Amino acid sequence: MTNAIDIRGLKKSYGDHEVLKGLDFCVRQGEIFALLGVNGAGKTTALECIEGLRKYDSGQIAVHGRTGIQLQSASLPEHIRPMEAVKLFAGWNKTTPDRELLAALGIGELAGRQYYQLSTGQRRRLHLALALIGDPDILFLDEPTAGLDVEGRLSLHEQIQKLKALGKTIILASHDMAEVESLCDRIGILTAGKIAFTGTVGELHEKVGKHYHISVRTADGTAVYETDNIRDTLFSLLARYRESGTDILEIRTDRGSLERHFMKIAKGG
Amino acid sequence: MGAFLYGISLQWKMDIRSKTLLITCYIVPLLFFALMGGIFTSVMPGAEKTLIQSMTVFGVSMGAMIGLPPSLVEIYSGGIRKVYKANGVPFCLGLVLTNISAFLHLFLMSVILYGAAPLVFDAEIPENPGAYFAGLAVFILVSLSIASVIGLAVKDQAKTSMFSILVFLPSILLSGIMFPEELLPAGFETLGKLFPAFWGYRLMTENAFRFENLLPLLLIFAAAAFVCGILLRRVRE
Image (cartoon, one colour):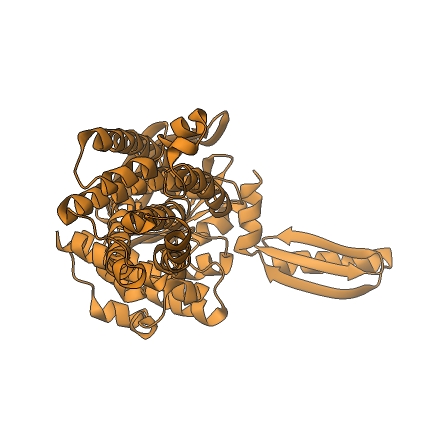
């Protein structure tokens, strides 16, 4: 599979603060790739450098295809109507808006409203429509579902899956681990200005190693154990608590979440 | 070209939807005309000879200095400029479209004053309408260039209003429309010459397209355009 995006040694500083310290990663054609990182990790800076919106200090960025960009801090003039924005941007890109796509995103329903009258979800849909106007091969989505309610989130997830089915490459930055787990083929974790991990969610679980968490609540508090072998660990824990004569009030087990594994990598674990 | 023309018509429509521009380009200048036109013609003998020009200088200065900068702040200090850049829209488009639209609105307001003043206050129509409207066009253009500098230099809406008023008030008070500049102290008279209103008023009242009035306006415009270029580059980077 060929790559849609190749990044080598990307560096970017703001004054003395080095935000990106040599990023290396690639995004394969037709996949959904999530760039993860804690606040201030440099996700938006990295994306804006790749998108060509921000100058970088050194490194190589190769983007193979037309791009469409939905920004986290996107805005439009207060008094513009959605279809007017679509027509304006289509005019500058010398394309005709895809009516089916606009209908799918519900842009037609917003016809009579001005930008300042739109809800957060409606604005996100409009900005996604604008990003898709030039029929891009690669789509950048920065926090696409931030601020959306459950319905808006599910609707946007559906649209993103449809775009993937059309063969588009999608790179997104997100804080929502459930979203990342359900949507993305691969993830990249950005930590301290470098990529600490790239691979599938399954590969992340493998790397971090401990697949299960066991929480044991007693009168003294709650102890959490990590294990790959839940059956043997449970039996040995029960034996240990019986020998010590401690009463167990509650036992909970769960599979290690992406969120937990992400935090381990993000904190250098 | 089609996209550019669509952009102009769209900006024109958005400006009409925006109450700010309606107030600054039409309502306040026309109310000022209705009120001050009556006062000027009653207390100042001969005021009707320059009423169209003085009211137009006020209206254009008000519309340009107070009306245009907020639109530019909205475009260039928020997420709009990034959306334009990300979607292949030329970076200077916002500046160009808002200026063209404001020019058309201010010219229209001036035409309304030109038609209404003789009917309402028996004001004298300029002897040479061709020279008058050419001078008006230059004056609007130069006023908008100064307003563009304010809109691009200041990143905050509240501060923009403050800077706009700081330019607008001396511009009007020292232009000669309220009282002759000979009555002003020499320092204020010199200060007044730094603003386009001073030269625009003369250009429109002298019934001739005189180079000595035109040159200062062209110099102010060139300086403002140069500064706008620098500011635009700074915003882009």
